[in-house]
Amino acid sequence: MKNKSYLYAVVLLSFCLSACELDNYNAPDSQLFGSVIDEDTNAPIQQDLIEGSRIDKVEQGFDNPNIRQIRFHTGGTYEENNIFSGTYEVQALRGNFFPTFKEIIDINGRTEHHFRTRPYIRINDVELTFDELRGEVVAGFTLDQVATNPVASVHLIADANPNVSNSLRTLMSSQNVNAVVPPERTFQLKLSTENLVSGNDYYFRVAALISGIGEAKHNYSAPVKMHIDNSQVIPDLPIPGKVLDDCESLEGWLSNWTLSLDYEDMREGNASLKAENQTGPTLYRKNFDPFDTEVTRENGYLAFDLYISDVAQWGPGDSQFELTSSGLPDVQEVSWNLHTEFGLVSGWNRVELSLAKANPTVDLQAVNFIRFYHTNILGPVVFKIDHIRFYSKY
Image 1 (cartoon, rainbow, N blue to C red):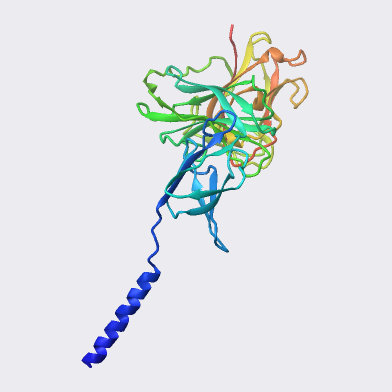
Image 2 (cartoon, rainbow, N blue to C red):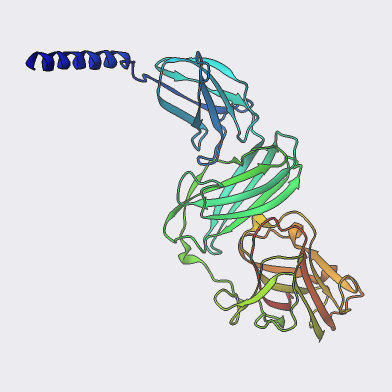
């Protein structure tokens, strides 16, 4: 029995040693690092850490090799450790730049490799300021279109994380563009800091998205750190004037949306008029008894407070706020296109519409109809309107 047990142990030990020799490969001993570079400016192309561009890496010499992906860091750099030395095919694609060509490189030890291409959009001349009295961050910038497709939209985004991006954000202000942008056009976006924690640091970044290119990601400016202190903000005073509707009753209001009163979020009084669950273009419509605005065309304004839960869902299209004295739309009318004439942001907006463009057929002493509609809502969004009034600036 002892001899058999001894022989069994020897055989088992020999098997284990043989198996260990078969698995005794060298450990990963190399690293790959570099960046994606704008070939015209030699600057790294800013990225989105979470949903940004990728590098495909394929080791050569295998019949069915696996594709390994490497993420870019926010600043356009990348680094991958624990790589086996060898020959690899690499390509940067699915990003905010023109895809690069496939390249064959040898990775041995610490290996540096840069991808050179061009971004779809360059964001230039970025100036970020914090208005301590108004409690808002203002971004001014220009765009340099490299791709010929129209620019879809521009955004100002904020987050406490330095990797702030479209996929990592606390707040965002957006503007739909849907046009080819000349380099001399200056953009301005404003972002209220009301919902940021006063006394904390936040990172702000401008983004722009090209249209018509599959898998295209946002192009970005570099993140800028700003200290937010709302202690000096002067609250908006209510605009005086003659109230047409205080938006505290559903009586008389019609809509293609579901209307309700919001008693928790309003700008004046006890409620605001909430519209959600769209089934058609008309958000708000109402007929009134003839109403004397007590203003003139030269110095009169129609004002109201408008809330949009996500302005990015407000797609390009016909967006009219109409005022008439005929009791009907399009007759004895003055109208404004809120999509193109106003830089609306997510959250509450104070809207002031000049009556100077009103034609003579509109009787400002007998206004009796308003309508607000938009023909291209891209996704779920909530609107609220409050405190509709007329006032004179002079």
